[in-house]
Image (cartoon, rainbow, N blue to C red):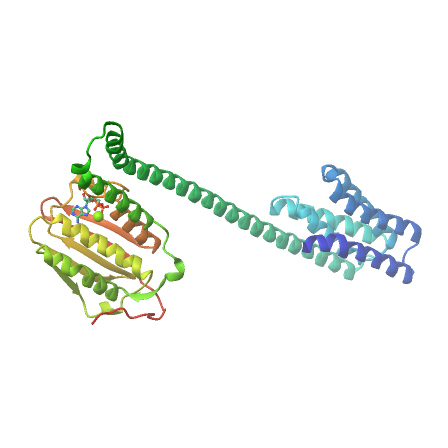
Length: 397
Ligand SMILES: Nc1ncnc2c1ncn2[C@@H]1O[C@H](COP(=O)(O)OP(=O)(O)O)[C@@H](O)[C@H]1O
Ligand SMILES: [Mg+2]
């Protein structure tokens, strides 16, 4: 936009200015030819834009008409026109060396024409030196702009490519999830359909199977309810909360259930931990820990302990949920975060994949280590908030 303003407005205005100056100062010896060459020069600038495929031909015309215009105007002020034209060509040639050669060529031509009307003395020789240095500076500035522009374009391209890749990955994930959900729902549906068909066609009494049918319907319901939790956390819900308050809420929600099946929840934290602030969707994060504790409860056949530890490691809040349950076999460790992977008869296999998604949406990580027969440790790392204020207090005591 600015360059177009320079070439299509400033440049023609400059040519007209030189014509007036040369005529007014009585410098030109042939005003008619000067005007003709000036107009030719302006016309070639516009033609170049219209007939881009004839660039070389029109560019030569531009240079020749400028030389003749300069020669007939007999004015040093044409120097600025050379510089503007040079800057235009610099955008076409690539590389500083080529640019410097081009600038050098322009200055040689300018100096030779200037010598036809200006006396050769020490002043004009220093003037030539200054002109050459100016042209080098212009070349370097334009080169810098070109480089910056190229870098910006590569960054934009990279970002576009990344976005495309991200979208593709997302679509792939959605397709996989949809296929998984369809597969999970098809089994109970087939069972229910079989019973209904049997009952309709053969008047088969399905009453004794009501419980089974209900349990299959409940399973489908559970699957869809959990599946809905995959929805992205609402970023507007993100506020700065104390992770300590979050864990206290989780414990108050799960304590009685754990106790009813004979388990103890132990929460350990150091003095500093109440200050561990994390930007989060409070409810989603509660959901993550409740899921982990439910898994821990389900993993312990005999009465056991669930230990929750909260630590600060560098700029991370680290929360560990440890149980003394059956543990996870090595072969299963890689699969437990996959949607629909479950080893439980009543499981949906969605709990951990939902936890992983929520934690990742918060810029954190979730990892597991486990020893079969002894128990498992789930570790969640969340980036600590830096410098924001504590928004709400959810603490119960
Ligand atoms: N604390 C744990 N101890 C032992 N196994 C676990 C634990 N947490 C998760 N798992 C394993 O990971 C699987 C997937 O868990 P999850 O995604 O919550 O689905 P679900 O609980 O419905 O099975 C479980 O079926 C279980 O095999
Ligand atoms: Mg679970």
